[in-house]
Length: 443
Figure 1 (tube, rainbow, N blue to C red):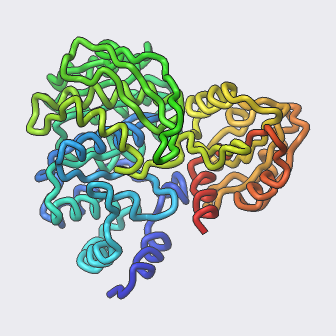
Figure 2: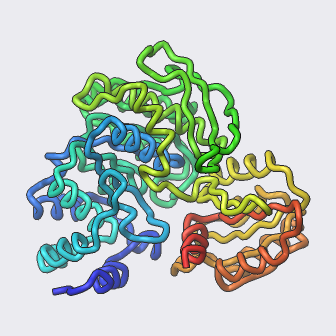
């Protein structure tokens, strides 16, 4: 019997296989454990109306956008996302409030002796905890973000009223397949019988897969870009009260219940695809028990960060000098980050970068301007990539200014000390680099 939250967290991290920390050793290529856990709890997944969100990039942002608008409409909304950045409880929230420490302790104490023989992974047990919490707190609807893939992801046991696939890209290929078509098949696994699905981005290699799966499942399929046009972003002056910067997007659609524009604090230009996907998904809810009107869609975007505490997406740490972090970590995500950096005015670019050991350093380092100063670091997880490997790959690419540091905080502090007037500092390469940074800044 655990008596404290810290004991439970230590147990979860130390005893259960966790993909984020261990990689392939923690991956389960079936749903058997999750099914057993759900049966153990009386199958709460069958009682919670759900919106299920998958995709290579943007699924966390889209999940938060949808949840925020649902909150503004007045629903009691569960939100399950991963990974967390600084606090385990970020993964499981209701109307923006994290699961209480006591609830985490109670869940593990209630089921520990029964779930240990099942030998669940960290993710499987966390998903079960979310279901249990959402059922006990009587959420009206919940938004579930997949962990990886879709077909064999634990979250695929939910019974959605709507499915969303943001996009397809190159990530987790050792599990999902080495082509975009194979990855698309895994993501398409969340398409359910008779349940509409929104596809965020069209891609020649994935369209056919999604359309065939939707036809097989007799599910209506909508490609978001065919139903909503969004104008280029217009950056607005800081709010006179909060001093926060926002971006306004104008919307054009045949759907007259949608707002004509939305404002958001999310500054990354890549969010335009996620915004389109989320708005089309929200418009589809008009035919369900959970409609969201145009006003609350607009309010949901305006209050997105307050409602969901979304972080690490082109997050501005300082404005003078400009210091930004972003969790983009795969080929497509890094491409969007580099595009954002290219749009900033700076004299010299400083990059605090780290990665996990299943990522190709060339995909990371080769994307950034070689004339920048690179500060390599290893995120504080067992599968963090050694800085020496990054350094050697940097040399092969002809990068001249490189430093190696043991930790993210050490690299960050060193970089900050060398940033000159008019320079820019970017921190990223991995979700876990950003997590370590935010943990350090929080302290």
